[in-house]
Image (cartoon, rainbow, N blue to C red; front, side):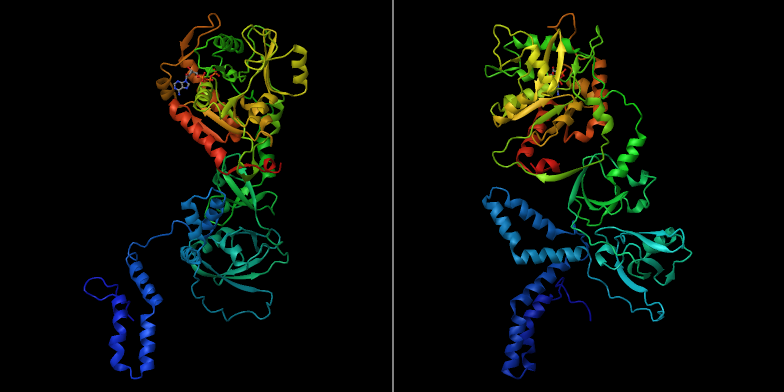
Length: 602
Ligand SMILES: Nc1ncnc2c1ncn2[C@@H]1O[C@H](COP(=O)(O)OP(=O)(O)OP(=O)(O)O)[C@@H](O)[C@H]1O
């Protein structure tokens, strides 16, 4: 039968044909019941709608459109769930109502069926040369389209048999429920596999399309029932299976990048986990190294002694920086004064860790840094999706970056933009209070004894010594800002970040990095930095050496601590960087994001 016309050109369309059919049939139908039956049938509204849809779809036949995704139904469900948590505006309510309609749900379900091409073709008949003796042999037919089968095989070293080594979760073989780990493969599409290498069998499989017939002897070992795979991890390293000599099957491997969120679907194998990208529409899992395995091999690769955690610019020494801070304190026109109130946390961050050139003593201590760095091997971190509840404390915003990159400038811009919303910490010092200073405003003035007791009790995030006086930032000063329901902006040395990664502070860590050197020269043409130890009040332009150091220091920080950074901002254009930071912080406050799972238990 020829295909029905779409109504193109002078041909009547199917729709017109249908509409005219009852009157054309009338002369041939005698009984009034038959006539009314035909009229009812051809006049049926749903039939007309169906034909109209058919005609519309015909236009797309030539362009053969391909689906954007295969899981529209799940997407719609997820979206409806997301929207439930939003404030219900008119548009949102309307969208939720639409998504809950059975018609839309069915439409999306049909869309997915078509997109996944899961309308199986008719299977060929079973082969009739089955060996009756082999009652344990199973004949399985799977329909394969472009998607791989999602199973790996290996040769048994002793028997030479080809065994199913792994079933990838969510893949075609897994979804069929017919093939299991340990099954012995005897034939593929009637071709015996004994004596063949696994690679040759994989080639047969990869070249097959449509129905594939397997003859298998079921393995004895039953697979444990699959639990709902709900573990999510953040990858803390980049991975490419092509580069991995240890992976048993490169084709089954899955690449990912540091920061990606992965759903771990199977941990049965202690060395190779199965996982999928959280945002991927493809349900099939890929192989990734397990946490233990990755930790073990990374630990083996590490040199016995690490280089110092970071290379810090020598543009300004700690004391120069402090002197500079002391100078600007009295400068009421400086950027550190806001609405008549000093924003002391802006004056000097405590993130410079240097050695005093004269005494070669560390000017700046930070508890337990290096030991932690050698022990930690960043692999995966279990995470859960979390959204800030209305009125709950804000996450601590930790900003890190190389000296001179613009951390103070970015903090200052945020504070000026909304002083009620953002806040900075008040540092502690043991130096004597000056006349114009107020305790708790510029500094918390402490006795040396009290300061040292607090050091001993781990109360400082960072502290340092300058000219016999201590300076430091305490955990309590952060708590104080957060308790005012403000977003606390804190810049620290990167190796301090891990000590702040607690359920209490839930830090959102932003790394500010310099742009490429050309852009750095161009944007910092008019920027001024403190010139040197002889004249602490004078400023000078950045030198080429400053730029080089800023870039290399940023690189070291990113290599060593990149897994702790949730957001990276390139500070080329200052106002663009500041807007990007502000937007990122807004999102952290209002949207769901992935945080270590332990933070969600408290
Ligand atoms: N994107 C930018 N474009 C031009 N100048 C900038 C930019 N960002 C920062 N600056 C300037 O660079 C200088 C150093 O900035 P800032 O003091 O904020 O750096 P920092 O990271 O806090 O450094 P330090 O740790 O040495 O205090 C300042 O003069 C600042 O105005």
